[in-house]
Structure formats: structure tokens, C-alpha cells
Image: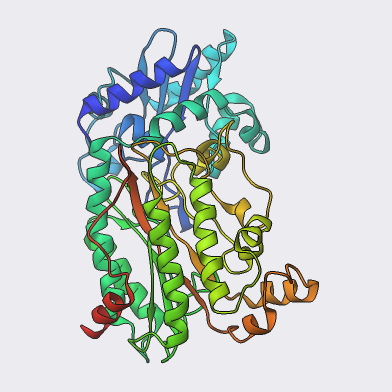
Amino acid sequence: MFDKTTYTTRREKLKTLLQDGIVLLPGNVDVPMNYKSNTYRFRQDSNFLYFFGLDQQGLAAIIDLDDGSETIFGDDASLDDIIWMGPQPSLKSRAEAVGVAHAESLSQLSDRVADAHAKGRKIHFLPPYRAENMLLLEELLDIKPAEQKGKASVELIKAIVQLRSVKEPAEIIEIEKAMDVAWLMHNTAMKMARPGVYEHEIAGVVEGIALSGNGMLSFPLILSVHGETLHNHSHDNKLEGGQLLLMDGGAETAMHYATDHTRTMPVSGRFSPRQKDIYEIVFKAQVEAINAIRPGVTFKSIHMLAAEHLAGGLKELGLMKGDVKSAVEQGAHALFMPHGLGHMMGLDVHDMEDLGEDYVGYDDEVKRSEQFGTAFLRLGRKLQQGFVLTVEPGIYFIPALFEKWQQEKKFADFINYDKVKEYIGFGGIRIEDDILVTKEGYRVLGKPIPKTVADVEATMRAK
């Protein structure tokens, strides 16, 4: 945990952004894999962590906006708990560690909520994403799970997004701890990638590195020779010479701050001329996008800038044609990059997206596009000092998308389908780094993971 003043300050700031009622914040509980006592690794709710810092199961909290009081609800360990898990700190001592004066048993939570409801007080809660908390909210508030997202407090959502979007110095330090682990994960994958190795052999070592860093993966590892499938979680393939291996993976610290990087590497150890051509287009687009980052610039404009660099490079290779700006404005580039340039990052690898992507990435000034490809941009609004975000352009040759667009003769003025057809089976290339928006511009976080063609090939030779 951070020191208690971090959490007390955050809660006081939250109180100033809301007017009346109570804030109800349930923590998470254990989730069984296949029977009750065999559970997935516990992961606390990020909003509960942000305001209360306690990383244990079965907790909830109420912040009273009218009298300023704060209460943590939970139960002390029973003798059975102690037998299986060892001595545990008392609820009171845990509450005091994060600056909360009041601690009550979990059974008292329903009484507190019922009292607020009976008095007609506003009860602020967030849209739940776990079934257990949906059932809890149904019990406490008599709102069916299907209706809870629509009845969640928009005021609370916007207040939390405002606070969590700008990272504190201590949060940046924590994120950079995870960067050291991520550096080792990606360097190790590059050194292991060679013909005859199975994807799952590399995946197992990479996940082990995340665990050995006293944390975990920040999301299920994407490691595949089929990089054209954007979120490919299969690790069944044996690597063959001539293939590209794409790894999109991040580390999470013990305090749950995340990283997210992608690198693409040639299984043969050297990029073929065709692979190098496509890789250099993605690399240059990423560099130009990162260089454009500064406070006050919309990330949507940076996404469009990256798309223009991709389209321009593809035009030089003969895969696209016509006016580059017009092609991007109309969405022709999305055949090759059908996703957004990046997203916010922090306690969540896609930071705060449980609160609603549009609340995090958009506002009254910048609206989400409805155009295919650009519509998947998670972050579009103006950047502010203290934002942490990813920049991840890519080029992919997706057979199903190619066939559909070719049959429809979609964007025939901008896409050379005969030439593109020669690249089907190529796979995909994506490059991603994590960026802090600074007062004057940006800083790429963490030790540099090999990224240029020369550096990737040199790392792979150092097997």
C-alpha cells in the first residue's frame, strides 16, 4: 500500500466532487474456478484499491458525503480461517492503516444502506462487472443486474475518472516497477523465439517472469504467429522459419499497477525484406505518434496522424493508392489497422474501462467516431499532464476482412486488392509502448525494450 495520507487525500478530493448522499464501494471476493475452495487468483477491484488500498477479499466501504464519515465493512478471521491461512490483521487495524476510523462487520452493510434508502438519500454506486457484486447490489438496492449499469451514478463515474486519469508521482514510480519486469518478459521472448519452439513454451516462461516479479500478468498473454488475430490467446503453434511472432503482454505489480507492450519478432532471427518493409512502416508511425504527444492535443488527432503514416507507407509499397488523407478520412486504412491507437493505463491495463469507455476516453468536446476502425479508438479526448497511455499502431492482413471488402469492392479507389492478396498469410505487426504525458510533451516509461529492426535482430542473436 501507499502511505495512509495518499488514501485519505484521494477520498477528500472525491468528497469535493460530489454533493450529497453516500458512496457505496464493494470490493471483490474470491471466484471459484471449478469448486468453491479452488479459486482464481484474487484481484481486488481497482476503484476500491484507489480509495482504500486494502487488497483482501470480502470488504466494502461507504463514504458519507453529508457528514464526511468513512466506514469499512468486513469480518475478522475466524479460527478456521486462521488454521488455513495463518493469523490475519483485524479489520480495525486494516482500516486504521488507510486512515479510516470506523470499521463494522459485513452484516452491518445492509442496515447502513437500508437506512440511507429509507431516508431518501442518494446512493452512488458504480456499474458492476462481476456477478457476485451484481447480486450484492441487487440485495442491497433491489435493482436487477440487467438494470444496474443504467442506474449507476454518472456523477460518481465522472468524479473518479477525473481523479484517476491524472497519475500521482507515486503511481508513476509503481508503474515503472512493472516496466522492469515487462522489459525482461519481452527480451526473454525474443531470445527464446526460434524454429521448433512452441508458443506455449515461451508463454510459460513469460508468465513465470511476471510471477517472479512479485506480481502477475496485467492481462492474458497474447503470443502468436497469427498476429493478424488481434487478441489471439492460443499458444498451440510450433514456430517455423519465416514466420513473425507477435507478443502483446504486460506485467502488474503487487499493488496492481500495469504495463502493456507489444513487440513483433522474426522467428528466423532476421526480418525478410517484405517483413522489414511492413515493420518499418509501423515503427515510423509509432515514433511520429509518440512525438506528437503533449498536453492539449487530442489523442484522436494523433490516431489519425498515425493512420496517415501507415497509409502513406502502404501506398509506397503499392498496397494503397490515391490521396492518403482522403483514404484515412474515409476509413480505407482500417483494412490494415481495424483498431484504435491506444488507451489509458494505470491500475487497470485499460484504465477505468469498467466505468464506461466513453466516460474515460471521450467528453463533450471529442465524440467517438462511428466509422469502422476509428470507432474502436478507446481514447480520443485532449491529453493532460499526468495521463499514462499506450501507443500501438499495427498492420495486419486479415483474410476474412480482406475477402469481404474485396467482394464489396470497398474503397477500390484507395486499396490495390491484387497487391494486398499477395500478403495474405503474412500475419500482423504491432508495436506498443507506454507513455507519460508531461508538462512539455511526453516520456516513454521504462527501460527501452528492443524495437528497431537492428535491435530486435541483435537481441534474437543473443540467444
